[in-house]
Structures are given as structure tokens and as C-alpha cells.
Length: 217
Image 1: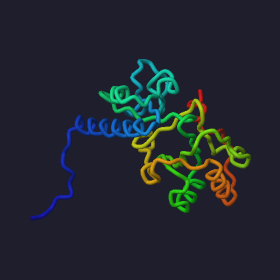
Image 2: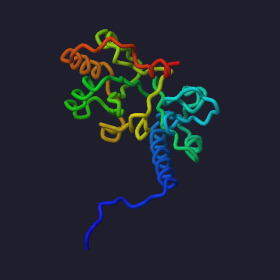
Image 3: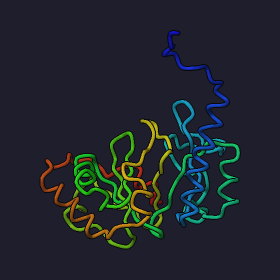
Image 4: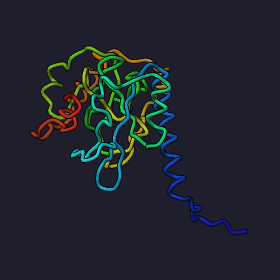
């Protein structure tokens, strides 16, 4: 018998359902650990759909009016959001944790060398590395000077795995389960990132990530 390498045909509706179920389960897992989640717009063609008619935002954005006020850990609320739509999963920052978002030139060496000491780490397909840390610590001066480093605190959010951005999916490099859902000291993570920044070339002079100003609004 000769095995075929061709993938079996699966109806798009089934693929959509499987994707929605996967997103819902991820959202329920985060909420079950006390991490508030909110539904995000999902990719449909060249833009993201939040379900609101006439929405002018084409990129990933919340599918609720106020992500900070709407985010929830309630199992019923979370299940309801993902009952019919494959919403991206958004995690709000500033309460359960903050997020240090950095370019690959800083994030990859720190994650590779730390063996989990820097806590949960996610990365986008566009190469943005996101370190989840205990909340409340502002950026140290040498990181705050870099326009490619962002601290997500109160009023902000991040897309969580397995959400899909325009460039591709968000994935865990270090899953929360690998570190028993514990969050590291933000000052220690910032020290490692600052050390990587001292070794890295100076970043180009560009505005801070557009997503940051939108998320913090």
C-alpha cells in the first residue's frame, strides 16, 4: 500500500468551528486562572471583524466597547462570547499582570538563556516578544528610552495564544503551565532585557508601536 501525502478534505465550516472551540478553550483556561479575558476582532480577509457594523478599525482590536470594563473571568460570560464567533482572545493588563513587549533582538536571547526564569513568554508572528510579569513596575530608564519597548499596564491589553494576527498566529514560547502559572519579578526581567539591549544595535528612530496607543486608550 502506498500512503498519500495529500491532506484530507475538511469542510471550511468544520475548520472554523474547530478554531472557535480552540479559542474558547484557551479563553476559559486563562479565565479559570484568574486572568480576565475579552473577545477581540478576528481576521476576515484583509481586515478584522468585531461584529459592530461600520467599525473603521481594520487591525486587531477589542470586540467590546471598553475592554478594561468588559473583561471577565466568569465562565458563563466567557463561553457566551465564543459561542458563535471565533474571537481572538485578549488579556487585559495592569491587574493580574503587566506585559513587557520587546523586539526579537531583545526577547529571543533572554527567553533562550533564562530557561523559564522570565515567566510566561508569548511571541507574535511579526516578531514581538511579550513577557508577562507581576504588575506595577514602571520601565527602567534605558528601556523607556527605546521606542521599540512597550510596557502594557492599566488600560492596555495583549492578544493571547492562539489568537491570529494579520501576520499569523500568536504562540507561547514559554507556556504559563511550564512555570506553574507564576509571574516573575518585573525588575529582574527588565534587568535581563536591559543587558540584552546593551549588546544589541541601537533601534531605528520610529514612533512607538501604533497598537500601544490604541490599546491604552
